[in-house]
Image (cartoon, rainbow, N blue to C red):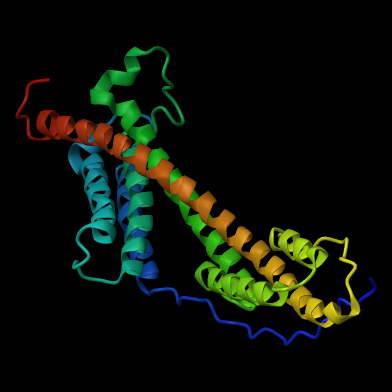
Length: 292
């Protein structure tokens, strides 16, 4: 059966999917930058201290303590988003605090450790893992948290861009709206298929399973069924296109969700190690409550 598959399509209205960047992004960036710059300038310029010559600077200015306080502040973001939503500020402001203070905490931790295990003093045996109250795993754990958070931020930006672009061009919107439209199209096809011949129904059933492109083998139908088949074919074409759009958005969600589960499992473990190191250092080397 020969038939034309060209259908006139109305241009889809392009939606605007954009959230203005909060001013808090700049404020927290400047705070983290200036705070870290103060410590690094004191270390490298004012006191003219060689950067790899012992932690005497940290014993006076407590870069490690401030690093841990920043880690605690960064962890408050999880409380704000999951448990205590009554805390002040918008969620976006907390995100930027989470990002920039997390980076600042890593920079101060590197200063606290004199960049050991990163630029020099690499671990030669397993004993260095537990030395200095699990100092090396704490540093690597903090770096992992920062890197994982950076990857998550990039994935979030990518996911948002993919979904926003797809939702702006598919004519339906995000996944929930797509599912509603797919259900409507299924009802339309079922209505056109009612009382039709078996080839008509078989093609419609096969086309309903298609994603992106309809089956090429068009059904051979009686002349009286061709008008309804044309309308059903148009609905099936939209169904296949929206099914591909839904799959694309779902894949973006799955990738980001996989990162989130990994982040949520490993980050608490890293925080436990960092907290043990921080409390031990505080009680032994800062407050002198416990003997060395």
